[in-house]
Length: 358
Image (cartoon, rainbow, N blue to C red; front, top):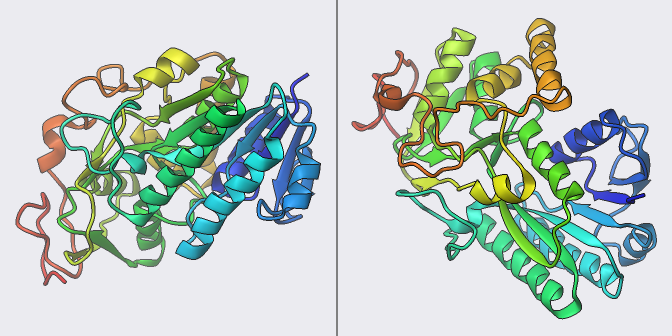
């Protein structure tokens, strides 16, 4: 029976992954956490990927190691340490072991800006900022170990994650704005496009990687295969919440125009297809604390993931990123509800607002 070790069970992805592993009755799972407050019946141990001794002892009997450690928390030095030094500790601990598979969680940010077509795994990465650069450098370390020491490694490049309990990002800022009437700061002109992936779909991709028979070194995009403007997200949130958002525009922040990924390889090798549409995902995320909405969405997710419904959402959309268009709303991208708040939108932002831009 496969022994699964999950490193980073206390984080946003980790909590959702161990919940799914437990719900799906996975056996022989051990989870590294940094808090005893994590609720799970799975075997847990407190540790740190930077502690070589604990790491080596705890993973010695592992068949599949899922490394979720190294998500950005606002401190670049800590981010580098966990990804680079922590990664080296893990790889050194696995060196010489036979029949062991490592799954590394990375990001489609390694590709950098890509406006005209969704990035494929074979495309040359060209990250423009620290986050993508560090993730890419981490991948290269894992690739070198795979080639030099014969390790089986799967790198999953995830899209922009969102969902209940996410601690950062545009969607969290929008949620705060709705609950506390905070101002949502929009970078540049608000027309940047991102490939958003609901947390349950990300977990689905990770589990499919755990169960896969892939060997050697593989890089696979796990995303929605679609791109959405910040303007689209704002429009949808206002429709779902029936509230207007207070917006402020900050043109001083540099930001890529578009980052999105092709998921054809994930479909082929992992049978992966995202199942939660952007509207469904935002509804669940924004309902945080609303039991009636949460219960109805949980029923949908249960039926989707556990009852054999594997139909990808939006069959008319480019879920694998193969066609040119990408938004779920087509020409409605340039049609938006009224938005009030500080800061006037730039002339190319599809909303009518007032005030003065930063």
